[in-house]
Structures are given as C-alpha cells and as structure tokens.
Length: 149
Image 1 (tube, one colour):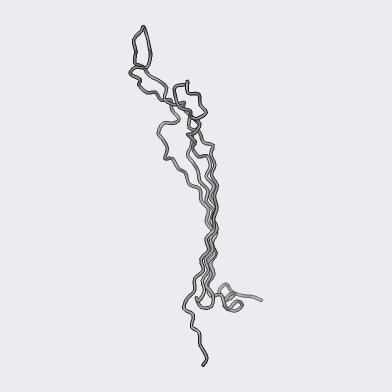
Image 2 (image 1 turned 60 degrees about the vertical axis):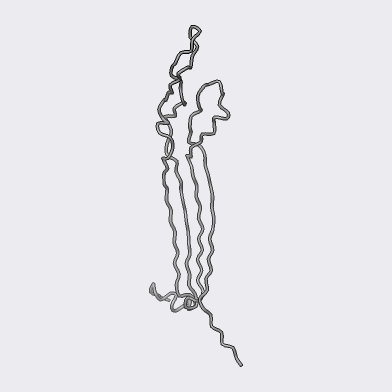
C-alpha cells in the first residue's frame, strides 16, 4: 500500500487526529564560580608572623591554584510525545528527560585538608550529578452523553 505522508493517519488510524514526536539534546556550560581559581592568590595578614618578639605583617597563600579548572558542563536529553484522539476529546502528553552534570566544582575538600596548612584546598572538577524524570498529562474535552428516557 502506497500512502502519502498526510494519509497514513487519516485513512488507517481514524481515532488519532494529531501526533507529534519531539526530541532535544544539548550541552551547556556554567562558569559561575569564584574568579582566578587557576591562579595563585595571597592575602595580606597584618599580624601574621612573630619575628624578633614582635608581630610582623606579611602575605599568606589563600588557596592552592588549579591550572586545570574548567567550566561545569550539563548534558540534557528530552523525548516527548503529543497526541490528540477522537476529535480532540482526549489529549495525551508524555515527556521523559535525563540530565547529567559533569566536571562540577567541588569545594568540599577543605574538611579533609590539614588545618595547619594555613590555606584552603583547591577547587577541583570531579563531581557528577545525574537525574531523570517523566511527565504525563491527560486532558479531556467536553463529553456529551445522550441519556435515553
């Protein structure tokens, strides 16, 4: 049987009057972190060192630099189906999505970093976060019933 594109549902599946399949894929980056994490930084310490029985000011390292730091990334995949049946009396929308964040920033290494070091641990890109979900929506239009009697 040879059908044109518009005739498949009209002639063969009469109760479906609208059908659409959607899909999307994307990767985005996030750079909203502290500036200069790749560069060595110092802070001024007014009374930081004891020299000759007097406190002397100086510079202290603030954080270990990470020259390999990069943006966080997030990959998103979404598939959806929209369908209307029986002259729009019943509509169905189904969506399924998946998100995967990777190279995410982690500042939590300070807890395991030795306190006597005097500065914070470097921020690193190694966290991953994964989530998925689904949405289902079913709508009905007005249904008129003929009651005998």
